[in-house]
Structure formats: structure tokens, C-alpha cells
Image (cartoon, rainbow, N blue to C red; front, side, top):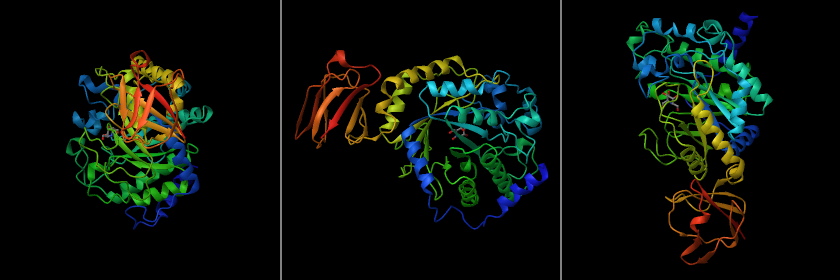
Length: 441
Ligand code: FHN
């Protein structure tokens, strides 16, 4: 059985033509386009960086968690001990998915393999995985996929193209060099074949998935990643699956959404983002504290207010918020992060109507806030404004009514050539987001 399964995988991968660098001429199917709309309506998802690196919890250094192998220059021989310490006995897929739903999130994107090369699922092409190498011995990705289906939450797989463990990830890139202890040799084509085989496993063994979240091309910017072949493979196996790649440049043909790391679209506080904002569905990924993976020392937890405001600011720029947690090695989510997610869920319970299914509104993002819109309903999200009168300009639409979203009470306003002038008395302000609901004629 294992041999013919592997045979099927290898045939599926090698059947592809390999002259495409990007999936030139890619035409998304109607199913894919419908899933893009679903994605844009969903607005809010949970990112999960979980792996054997969580056992080290950052090693007492802030800012490193999933990068500890590279930053602490831990050779493969030593790092390979970690899986034998990884035993998440408290992992409860149902509780995770319930927590996601209670937070108002619609999908999960989890690390199926990160840069350390360790597969968090039952890979047949490599025994460097949670089933073969950890005392836990169970496929957590399978458990999560089943629970997501039960609770109607979509599941995306983060997959690292960068691999500090595989001998054929050669020539090495900017990271994971000689300290790993790998021979200074390797076959890049074999590595790409290996990667495509693992992706085939993820796209054939876990039911319909939301999509693939690639990361790591930036490690070998000039390499021939043959991503067209990979994208075609994915779209052949699951045409509706959405592909995104965190390469920080203009999306390549074959990609279905564009992500921004730790930055709102158009901003570049990290220095990574390209300036290009595509017409594709957009997503901003964000740490809930200062780390992606679990870091025992990291107390830079963002406040629920800050998190809600970033969700709103992203929605006002047509982008989803993919909010990250780094589970602990025992399989639990830190209590501080559970509390913040619950608080966001409470806010979404009351105000979700002004976020889900909307697109950025006719009023552009400003320092005071943003707008979201669904048809004739325009929502002004006033996030940071200490005056009692707000002038929105330009504003050329005809207005039928303006009310405070919270209690539907009337807002005093005047519309003239200058724009829309709105009165916002102090007692009507909300310290997180004062939402005005404008019904356009
Ligand atoms: O190196 C990764 C990092 O570990 C993490 O996965 C983030 C998530 O967007 N992406 C890379 C850094 O750009």
C-alpha cells in the first residue's frame, strides 16, 4: 500500500511539464473565484505556528522561537533530538476550533512544515514527522482537519519552501548554512520534487482545504523555484484551493491571494513589503505578541483594543486579519492569548455586521479611522478622534440617514460642498471603535 501510494504521488508530481516559472495563463475556476469571495467576506482567521521548536520556547531569548535552529546555529544532529521531547498530550482539536469560532474567526492557517523541515503531519516521503519521530505519534493536522470540517471552519496549510533539514535544499540560501552539518552538495530538482510530493500529500490526505500559504522563497531569491509547476499541481488536485506566497513582491500568476506580514497593505514598517497592492484578495498576518512560535519570555501581548483596531484597519483596506498564536509544547494556547481571542469574539458578536462581507468603503483610510461598506450601508469606524465634530471629505454621495451603530440613535450631520460634517458627542464615543452607520440613497 505505502509503495503504490508513493508511486501515485511521484507519478502525479512528475507528470507536470516543468518549463513554467510562474503559472502563466492561469485562469482560476469558478470554484476558486467563489472561494476568493468567501475569503474576502470571512475577514478574520487564526494563524498557528506550532512545531518541535515550541519545546525550547525561544531558549529564553525574546524574538526567536521557530528560528531557534538557525539563530542558535543548532546542527541537525542535535536538533533531531527535539521531536522525541515533543508530546502535546493536552492538544484538543475541538477546543482549538471552538476557540477560533468564539473569536469570530472563519478559518485556520497552520504550519504543516516550517523552516526546520519537520512535518506536523504523517508524511510518507519523510519520516522526519510527528507520527514517526515524536512520542505523541498522532497526526495533529488530520485531527484538526476533521474537527474543522465538523465545526465548519476552513483549514489552510502554511508550507515552508525553505528547509534547513533536507540535504537537497542546495545550494543553500541566506539561512541554514554550514552549521546544519549537511554535506556541501545536493540536488535542487530532487528537493523541488520532494516539496511537490509533500504538497500532494497535504492536498490528497486531508479532504478539501482552504489553500496553501507559502513562505521562504526569500531565502533563495534568485533560485528557479519552478513555482508554476507547484501551483499547477495544487490547482490540478484542488482547483478551489487558494494559493498565496509570502515572497514580499508582486503576486505571480497562479497565486489567488496576497499577504502582508506585520503590516497593513500599503504600509512598510517592517521593510519587507513591496509597495504593490494587487487586485487579489488581501490578508495581513500579525503576531498576537512579539513571536510567531511559542516564546516563554515574550510578554509583548497586544491588547484586545489594539487587536480589534488592527482588524478594522485591515478591513478598511480590503484585507483580512490572520492573527497568529504560538501554541505551547503541551498543545495548549497561552491563557493570555485565549483571553484576547475571547475579547475579540465578544466585539465581533456585537459589531461583526460592520466587518463580515464588507469591502473597503468609499471613504478612504485616514488617521481618524476607516470605512467599510456593503451595498448602500457605509460604516465609518472612528478609531482615534478626540474632537466632537468630524469632517469627512471629499463626500459626494447622497445620504438617507446617519445613526450610531451601537444604539441606532440619530447622528447630527450636515452635507455640503466641503463634505460630510458629523457631530460625535463625547458620551457617544466608544474607546475601541465608534461606528457610524450611514445609509446612502
Ligand atoms: O521566517 C518566517 C517566520 O518564521 C514566520 O513564519 C513569518 C510568518 O509570516 N514569515 C517568515 C518571516 O518573514
